[in-house]
Length: 199
Image 1 (cartoon, rainbow, N blue to C red):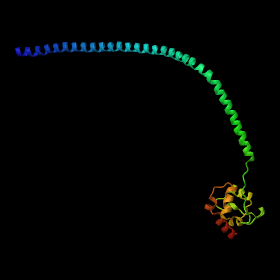
Image 2: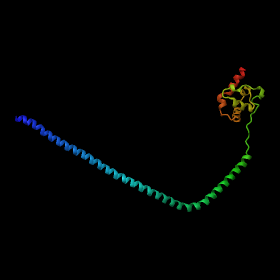
Image 3: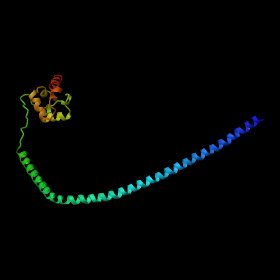
């Protein structure tokens, strides 16, 4: 019976002690959480106040400093500006007059400047009339514009192109403002000889 009594009383005593200990643990735990939260909130409030105070101080002192600096800079610069402005104006007037003199000098030298115009020697290739023209566009490297330029300087047919020598090619290149060496690369003379034979 004693054993039975101890069996029932022992767990109930431990259960009671367990409930008391657990409840004290919970009370302590939640109390510490609440205290920590309130402590953090007070720290956060204090820091926010400090930040706001610093922002206000900075804004106020920044405005005062800016105003002070602007006034200081203006009072320092104004006398210097008044002294420098007439000198700069004189320099600008002198530069304008010198530019006009240079422009007038350039105009007079341009008027007297003459360039010798390149002329083709028609003895090297036969002269042709406008009605004796061939379709020069068939030659590689000649388009409608280049054909018109060739016609303007008196070259109308394959016979004339096939008789061109290197001196004539250089002169034609200069006269029609064509790429140097392009006539030789495209072999206008050889192509014109083939077309002359085939026609």
